[in-house]
Image 1 (tube, rainbow, N blue to C red):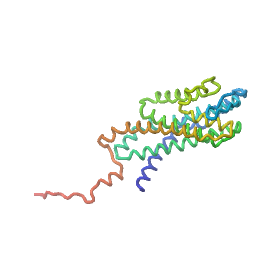
Image 2: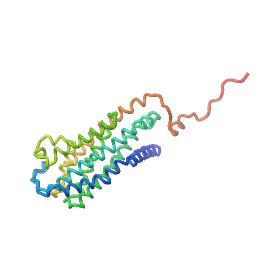
Image 3: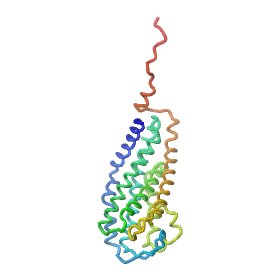
Image 4: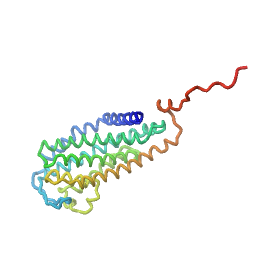
Length: 280
């Protein structure tokens, strides 16, 4: 049990260190989120934007700058978390294969990535919620943070998929940006009638958008939509697990180039073999 805990902690530390070294992601978290939220509040008119919340059927009329802040926060949180997980998966792919070749259990690597994704998503979602509260007070800040957290987890899992399957960084960044733009853009009430279409129910952040909008302008708790978003994360995480398995599968059948100290110690015989031949 202690050995498994040590392996998990070691793999999680590797992932967290890799996140900390991603300076661009740190800059985006520190500057992009507050800048985007502040600009949306200052530039977009406060004219009421009527739209019907599909989760409850209620007609809402929030201020245009406030609903834009929510959609902008969803877009920023999903992009940043997806980028962080894509970078750590893409750049650490060779290292993960070497660990698999050395006998490192892949389950510990997967659990470590899930842990780092959870911590990163929680931090980014809480930060974005705090930035929104500096401009106005959502009715349910906890539900807003939970909705942003679930959306970040979903796109973090998508980042793992893109990082495991795509071969160039520009491909992964383009895939993440276009997915998030189409996903959030079609649900934005300011974009027109797209938010009322049946198609939006099948978008990756549908549950997040519904729960976040309800959190901002109503007192209704929407656990069902958070559950829908969690199902999106579970599906994306399963696909990411398959992609990670495919990426490290060949490494397990290859001849190991090095071994971890604990694995080498286990395979050494208790007593060195004695020479069976005698000198003449």
